[in-house]
Length: 112
Image (cartoon, rainbow, N blue to C red):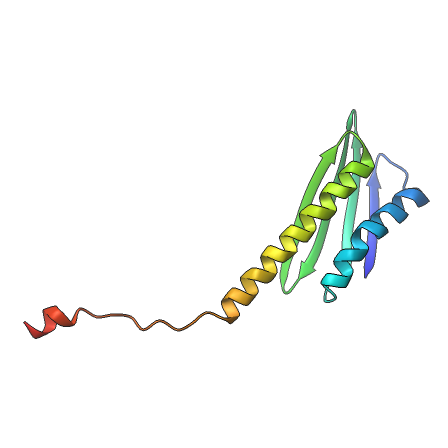
């Protein structure tokens, strides 16, 4: 999986890169069809924000998290992304396993 990291008002250090890569390693094992993750780190006064966007089975999945500490925000966004991807996977399997329902007509009224 290719992870693109960009930052607004912050320099991306090697520690930040390693932290992001280690948190998303589990997701890449569970969802091998994901090829790229675009992550944007924004630093504001007393707030660290992280936004991650990816394409999964034809839909764009975007999650956001913010915290006072950057590494806590990274952990939050990793958990949110895993939940969002699981939800999307459930929608796809529900559509795949959906049974055809025959529309019912009111036979009682037609015979009387």
